Structure formats: structure tokens, C-alpha cells
Picture 1 (cartoon, helix red, strand yellow):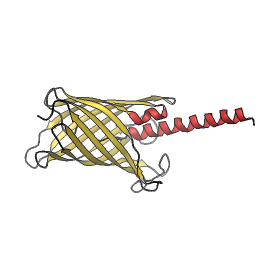
Picture 2: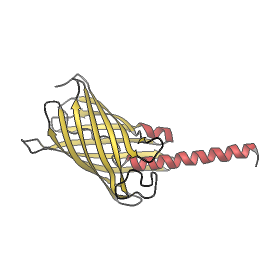
Picture 3: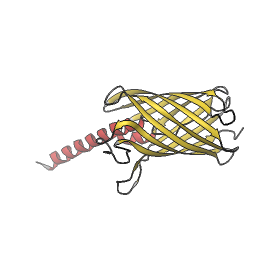
Picture 4: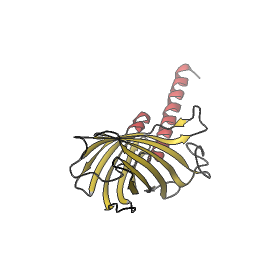
Length: 231
């Protein structure tokens, strides 16, 4: 085989690996691989820049770490009960896959004493790349409690419709804490059991970080930046 043929074959192999990795990351990206934003709806006409970084824990990898899945977006309060948002999935671009999502969140019930606030959110994920284009509907339900004037504790879960491959409905339970660290900056730390109903013994991570060979434990850091400060 000539040097030119070797380079051509190597280039093709690299493109194939990148395409497969991108498709696999998109599959993980659709299983709620970003911090829940918003935990509670925003005030009317309030706007926040938002970002999330993190993903599946990889305890058996070298070095041990967290997949740095990254999203960047914007939230806006249409009124005191409804918030809309949109995000770009930045990591996917490195693998030749464009990813984005749009969302609408609604306050279903305000907190009353020990009863938590209930927030529902509908999202639509979209990915397009060498492997084609896919749309994935996603629904998130969040229960949140105030733990002082600047802190929210929350838990909930997501259900993602996957039209192809394996479970048609992918379930992801979650819990987290959100803290207002200044008038403008809000931080979140969130843990998830991603794709808890999906067999993970084969695939991208081959059960690394799974529970009972299902799904994968994930950790995400969320950031929100208020335009105009706190209300």
C-alpha cells in the first residue's frame, strides 16, 4: 500500500470514528445531559444567560473524570408563570454534529409551606450531522423547596422519546441544589441517573458509571447570569 493510500485510509478511519463518536454523544446528549434550567420559572420579562457543563461519570477511565458535555443558551420569562428558552450543544460541534434545543416551562403549583413548587417543562432536542437529522421530544418535571432566601433544593425526572434504537422512552431521575451567589450569578450542582431504564453493558461507555448495568451516573454544573440583577 502506498503512503498516499495509507493517508487516505487513515483519514477515512478518523472521520468514521468522529462520526460514530458524534452520534453516540448525541444519543447521550438527548438523555437530559445538561443541568435543569429553569428549576423554577423566571419573573415576567426577566432574561438570563445560561450554561451547563458535565455529563456521565467515568470512574474506570484514565484519568477518572466527567464527560464535559456543554450547552449555552438563554431563558426569558414570558410572564410570572411561563418561561421559554433555547440552547446550543457546544461539544457536539467538535464532532461535526450541530445540536440545539428549545423549551417552554410552566409553574404548575407554587410552594405552600412544606409542599414543593411543581414545574413542568417541554423541550425539543434537534441534532444534525453526517448521520442525518433527528428530533427528540423531552418532558421534565421538577419539585423544588426554598432552603433560605438564596437556595433551592430540588428533585425530579425527565422522559425523552427516542424514535429509534432500544427503549422508546428514556427515563432520567435527578436531584440538585441551586444557589444565588450574587445579584447576577446563580450556580447549580445536579446529579442524574441518566437513561436509568436503558441497558448500558454495551455502547459508548460499556457500563462505566452505571447502576445495575443500566444508565450512567452523571454530574452537571449549571450557571445562570441575570441581565439587570436580582428582583
